[in-house]
Image 1 (cartoon, rainbow, N blue to C red):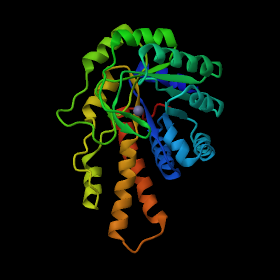
Image 2 (image 1 turned 90 degrees about the vertical axis):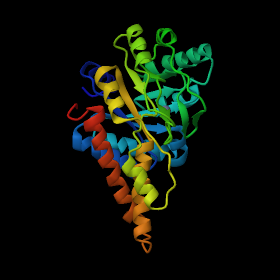
Image 3 (image 1 turned 60 degrees about the vertical axis):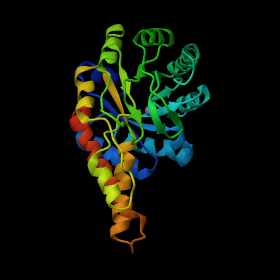
Image 4 (image 1 turned 135 degrees about the vertical axis):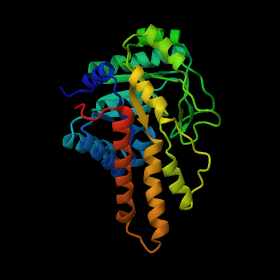
Length: 305
Ligand SMILES: [Zn+2]
């Protein structure tokens, strides 16, 4: 079998997660793809509206399609679609799934918008991810100053009324590289309530980068200033996958950090270098390294194709 629905069901049953990795250029996508090939892991490659406008729709989708030809266990996903039109466009372009992010709207408006996207996407067997609650932080065109945890009772109503295939929940993760100021924790109690009301329903974690110290240190050692960057501890993510119904974990920040750490290092250590291949190649390799580690040790998706 080779469609996204099959792997979501498999992940739910066998307690692994699909990494949903964002890409913004060819090198990051190649780095992600290589990690999935090496580990034989199904995965989602995500394009945000920001990435679409940066790369151009034709380049972004063209690159993704080349990857799918090389490794057909990669599924193309629209990250944080903000309107029906953007989601419709992604469906028409052949995406495997779309996210409609109505989390900034009222509950009623979010339901109406998400339902409309589902009605359209499902005609073409494209899956839809909705979001309820608000995830703190900034990423591309998505930002929220505050955290609003997902209300479990509303989550049940939302899923029933919209017919979404997966739901992004807010339980304490956050977008970007500065996730916490105090103690790092996730609200597993809220997650359990949601799972009680929505048994066997696939859930999604956004803002789940680990922001590894090694990457932050390398960036800072070579001229960066990311002093207080903190991510989600690996153990909490492992628990979310192993003991809960989290079947998709979004990763964007860590990929950016991996690329930037190598680019900074090469450019600082070899100031006479001006061939972009000399710094983009190590960046690409670093992405493969960190994604391989996540697949093996956080997503547990290795050998699941
Ligand atoms: Zn997100």
